[in-house]
View 1 (spheres, protein in one colour):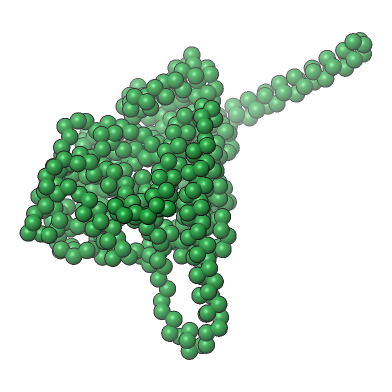
View 2 (cartoon, helix red, strand yellow):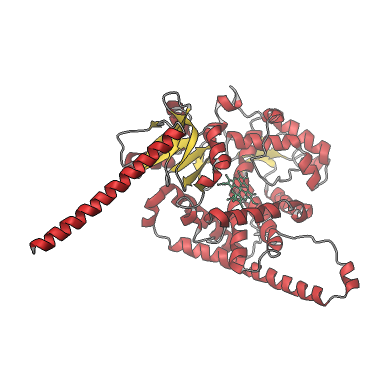
Length: 499
Ligand code: HEM
């Protein structure tokens, strides 16, 4: 090679390296200044020798497979304090169960974090690319605003008769002769039927033995889709090596089924609008007050974009089914072991609704039932972990230094995992009996951070306490939501006088 050319290449390489070095130094200085300004100190670091974070991946996978993720989480918070860091695939991840840090991430410095990018956008893109779980920033805000508006009008959609019909179908599927059965899969079917009816106005009919073939295919596809999403979420980058053929087939089937309903609803709306246009003023005066038969009906008032509408309601089918099924199964698992609580809530339901199906207002007034759900979600949170990625350099108020009381620097692009599992069971937050199921504690606590649609228990069909038929401990099963790996084995004996 010509010496001049060698010189030119060497000079270019030198400048390149110098430029990178300069930028690194500038960045390091800026971070140091930022950390000083906020009095940040280092957190404890799990396995400091695991620079690439490969041991963490191996141990996380092992605990997931063995069903020991939650006990290990508790152990790590006990060992390192409420906030510590780990290396995961060469990236620093901050784990926290400190309520102050939760507040900082979710409220005070909310804008510093993305909830989708790099965390769940890739999981949701094949099924709901336009849905809220795949969005951040202004798009997320707009979607959130719309849901909040629609959910504030749940009363308009709530149809006690439809809900009661699904409950009665469940009731017919229960073994009421005292034999042992697992109620958890039936609760999944119930929430599938309730939520599809609520979201798109067409029930999946999964509790019915004569379910139509296209609905069965839709339900199987939805369940498969969620299973793969949960698996890939936990596997992280490794998931790219697994076949996705069946997953994409399932996503397409779910989207096809929902899209048919969306198009029908849009066509219905077009006809109604046309009729309204041609109606005389006197006709308009007699138009009845609007009642939505589903969330979709509310959504078509805001958009006529098929992609947005389809993804908007599929999002609800992903978010609202397993979470509620997990809550119901856990609640019944607990009620079967706490006869006092069972009797007390049964009495409250009877006093409020008697032997009739409860109305929306009756359900809202059942404070003790709400306390039971809050307590079940506290002890066994359906979503025990969540995560955010920072979109700028930021800090957490606590977790740094020897005493764990100083602020902590979190650099742009780093991840914060916040574990309700840790905070819910921490005696510092809930007292010495934090591990116990005591619904009465909610008489003095606020639960407005927990959003759920109350379901409607009816007391008349089961007058004796449900019996626990499983001596085993509650055992974790982590999917999209947390549930008991052993199901909810119970025995129910119906009092013939109440039939
Ligand atoms: C026990 C029941 C439920 C639990 C524990 C639960 C929990 C959660 C959690 C932890 C998130 C993530 C929030 C975030 O990352 O910021 C979430 C998001 C969401 N959930 Fe639920 N959920 C439940 C029931 C429902 C139901 C019944 C629906 C709808 C009918 C629903 C609709 C949504 C939606 C639309 C989002 C996305 C909101 C957002 O990104 O801001 N959820 N839920």
